[in-house]
Length: 245
Image (cartoon, rainbow, N blue to C red; front, side, top):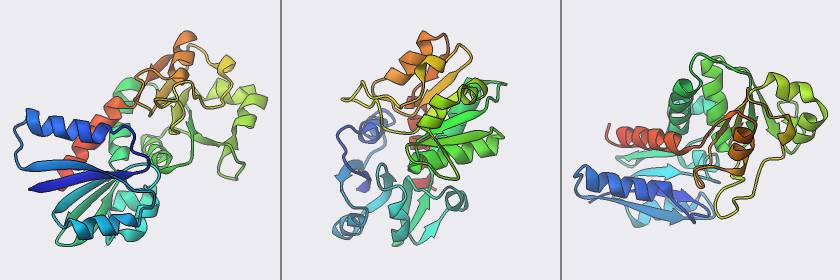
């Protein structure tokens, strides 16, 4: 039996388990199992792998994308640049980390934007934001990182509210925070919604619900909005390719 799984906390709703279980059935892939491992500490991965040495691949989600790096034997070159891991390949006892969030986001963003390359605001500072920023950098898209706390490498939500020029010149907004995720569907990042216009693009990495409060706010102003579902599919397929390489 080939075994794969997802680590994170909490795992109240998992796209990955449903996706891979259905993939195995639809494509007639036999002898494969995908499980969920809800662990509050990334170091518990060592226990999981000791208890079940048949596991070949692990997906990693919030909040372990950075902490899990210390447990790995090797990092993919691109992963070193990003500083976050969401996919682990286990082969001959060696754990190698990859970042397929980068692949999924980049490959879903390009056709959506088309020829447009607007300056971006990246909301959040977690592991997903690192992959997003690396993809924007690779695409030549200028961006500012937005967080609740002030830092030399980022601006705050208060900065957005006090300086309307930022929203006027940054038309791509990427939400990498979990705000708005089911069941807390009213959650929304503290950006000045009244400054959204028809020129704005909101890419919300949240996929459940399919239309978040942030997306609705942008659409109401005539802008464009996209959720993270396609990104998840692309990153899942990239992980499957890695596990079978």
